[in-house]
Image (cartoon, rainbow, N blue to C red; front, top):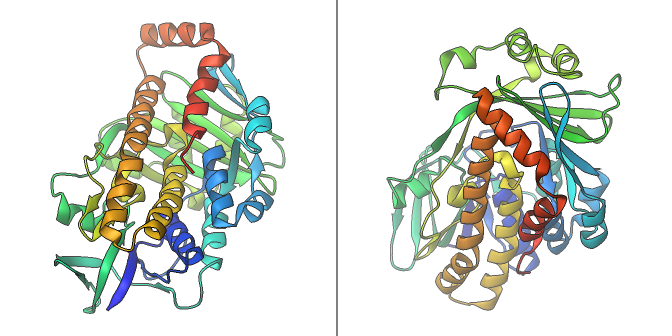
Length: 379
């Protein structure tokens, strides 16, 4: 019987495995997919993630493969600034306050820190049986494993969370998103931005190695078959009245590089700890991406959970202590990100005018206070 296992080899699971390994624990990671590969495009992250990477001992390696972002601007569809956040003062305080990295590169870095055979693939959870002193997990390949403790990092659609909390399911935010990465060779874009218009929202994020990550969010019903079949030309039609270089970015996107998904989160939970099982990452607190904090919170989880496990020989107590440190913070992220998404996705012209006017009058210090709240963590 294993002492502790992790279910899920995403950012949360791998980061936690690294953190526990540094504490002398030797967890195995069980992954549902038949192949270990990162799904997604670019990812924007904040200073709190970089501080967590420092605890994991991989800060410098991440920085070497990251693009430091100096500013973030919200524009209207004509290209006129609504609000701008300058990260230079925050960079001086935190070292690196905002950066981007290709999700595949980050995943590769995390995976490289675990020894051979520490990640077992094709292990999709079918059923769990929680006992007083152990948990038995049955997998889709017909095998099962038993462990004293289980860390569930199996994502927003977590089978383990579903077993523990059947009513906790993914919650649709009201809009779908298309993502892609292109070469930045003819555009020379250096700052991160979002354009908020009546037809949707378009984000642009520079990446290392002269690449560019973009996302396009459009309101609509969930599981929309029409959205699932959208092409680049469909997106160009939606965003035809948006400022340059949005059309150029879409025109340079290869169809096979376009990724679509609905935007979901989960309603904030009252518990992450369930005896000898604990939920982390998206399994515990999946959030919409509007604050760029989903992966950041997962990496925070890894550092804090490892810290509590080191303090407590009874991991059940560690799980409860972890829960106490994480519930309020992750609830704040879920709720704040959800509100920002609703504001960003407004389509009524009058409401858009009022929103833009209000944001233009809002001082920079308000943005900085919110960022400082996010960047202030208890490790």
